[in-house]
Length: 358
Image 1 (tube, rainbow, N blue to C red):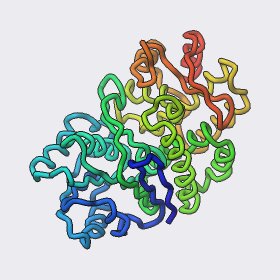
Image 2 (tube, rainbow, N blue to C red):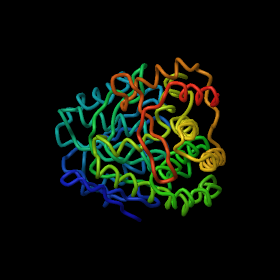
Image 3 (cartoon, rainbow, N blue to C red):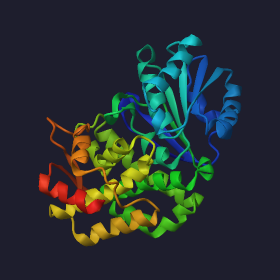
Image 4 (cartoon, helix red, strand yellow):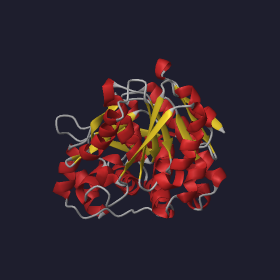
């Protein structure tokens, strides 16, 4: 087991990375102070790992209940969030009740938002079961739900007590879900560590085959990078925005198609290709680097051509973005692997990228 620490002072927490961690009671015990625990999971993950987690918690002598939500990005909304609140209120959960998010990014985001909101804040633990959630969404305290007009526009910054990333859980991932997670690994290397980007290129076949050693290294390095960025800028006042490379275009794809049509990582993969194209058009990135990024996204079995939503629709959707200011879109662009910039872009360059990307 490897442990990466997120250094946030009194809100600091560990990220434990290793195989078969869901069954280890000693990883959960230090982070559960109250007498009750509510596991939040979904219809896909519950039959795979629900019993294992409940068995791990049994020696702790807690009152354990489970909320099983429908699976998919389409359910990341108020109606589904209220199912968590209904269960907590029905069980008379108190301020010391600990929530455990057992699932991918949707479950983690919704459980974290519920924890931030219920009684104005109860503790929660992230147990991410997808590659995307292990390398990205479970770390950093971003929680929330989608709105029909914009992705993740309603939520809160709220840090977990711990993240327990069980690499063994990745064995049951469908190929599309694995590829979606690799997209966030590629993003991390592209924005923050050129040598890590080189490593991903060299190991993409091993990652595609879900080889444990390669996955463990990808999760460890991605978490190290994200932890350092979050420690420097917890609430996205500046530096943390670089983690959204590919997301401005990607979120527009998700909202424009309807949440769940493309997986988040698929949209981010395509969004990175679009952002690299715009970076080249504005003179920040050389074409050889763009070609390397496109080739790696393709090698990860991710889409590189955007859906034809129309330029005007893309622009409207991108204006509903947390980085936008007074309706002005801000893009995360590349100067070289490991170096980004946050900037506005002329309309003609954005339109040219959109035209070339479909």
